Image (cartoon, rainbow, N blue to C red; front, side, top):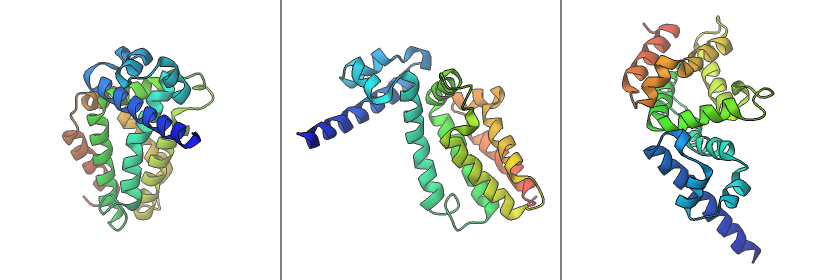
Length: 196
């Protein structure tokens, strides 16, 4: 009996995440309520709250799932995104992948950003404490430091990642436009790493 409940819970979790993702593809984030997600997933509203705690928790978990795929590619995938490539090429590949992830999940990124800003613990836990951000920052910092030990790699990593939240950049990503941004990141990275 206990094994069946766990299987049902896992199925419900996946159904809820898929329903939220599909609704975010078709509707602006503010129109994706817990009630709509529950109805689309074929579960009760209480099940969503039980699994994720809140709408914010649901959006954070959905974004974490998308980011885990990128983290896996960075950690264990083939070069240039994964290990084995030159630090500059890995960094170019990383920012291209982040831009594509953000553009392909525009409404999710907007919902995630809103969730990060409006959650109850926002004052105690800034965006920079988010596990996704911490992983991205550590990765970017390490790659910069490999090539440029003469600069503050951590500070530059914050600056590069921070541009993703600037409104002109964020609006392009929400519109699904990432190729130009990826090219601009590549130019910045190659200049920083002494390749141009």
